[in-house]
Length: 383
Image 1: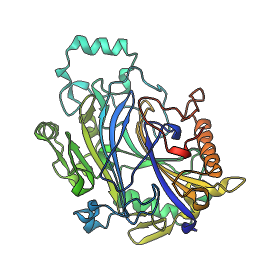
Image 2: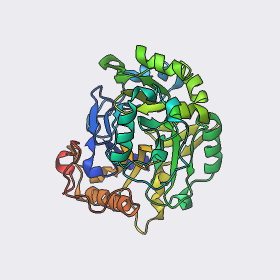
Image 3: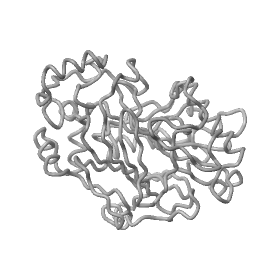
Image 4: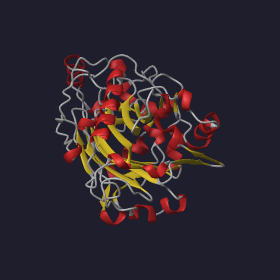
C-alpha cells in the first residue's frame, strides 16, 4: 500500500494548511515561520526520502554524524525559535492535554531570574495584557507548559492496530516517560513536555552548518545559556536533562523566556517513512493502513496526515505545526503540485480541523497568509 503514496511536508504557525509553507526536506536551507507568538526556523530531515518536492535529496549529511549514525535515526525535526510575549492569550480555558498550570513562585522560575524585570513593568504587563497569572510565569513559557507531540482532529480508536497498547507502553516506559494523552479520545493527542521530550536543547543561537545538514544542535548552550542552565540545576548532558526534567520542581524552575533564542532537535529511529512502519525495541508495526484513522470515514480519504505540534498546555496557543501529508501518487502532478482530488482532500482535512476548533471558522479561507508566513505552493495552493 505504501508504494501508492507520496509524502509532502509543510509547516506553519497554526493548523491552517493555507498558511503553511512547503518544507524542502533534507535541504540545509531552513524555512522561517513568524507569528504574534513566535519566530522560528525549521529543518526537516528524513532518511530514504522520496517525497515532495520532486528531486529532493534522499538523505542528509546529518545522519552520518553521531549519535544519529549509531542510533540509525530515521528523521529529525530541528527548530530554532524565539517565543514572543503574547498581547493576549489565545485561549483561557483548558485544552486537550491540559493540566492545572504551575503556580510556583515566579521569582524562582526560569533560566534567568524574574527579578531582572522591574516590578512596575511586570505589574503593568499583567493588567494591560489581560493575562491571567495562573497561566504561567510572566517572563516566558513554563517548563510545564511548552508541549510537543501529535494530535488528530477525529477519533482513531476504532482503527488502532492490534498491539497498540503494548507499543504505547514501550514508548512511555523506555523512550519518553513524560508522554501523556489519550489516543482513544474523540480528538486524540499525545503530548510531552518539550523539556523532557526533545532529544537536544541548546540555549542560545546554536549552529547552522550546511555540511551537517543545516540546523545542528548538541545539548548545552552558549556561555550565557550554560550559566543559566546550571543556575537552576539543569544537567549538561541530554540524557541527564531529560531525566531531570521529569520532576515537577525541575519544570517549575525552567522557563522559555520571551525574546530569547532556543534550539531543539527531535529525532529517533522509530518511524520509517520509506515503508511507513513503527519500529520499537522488540516490536515492529506496519502503520500505513492505520495512518490517521483513515478507515473511519464513509468514503476512503485520498490524503492522510501526521501532525507534530509545539503548543502551550495552559493557554492552548499553537506555536508551530509540522504536517506530514500522504497523497496518492496519481493525485500529484509531475511538477509536484496537487491535482483537484488532492486539493479536495486537503479541504476536507481543513474542515475537520475547523470542526475540532483548531482553526477559527471566521478565518479567511482564500489561501492568503497571516503573520508574515508565505503559504504559496504554486499550482497546488487552495483557492
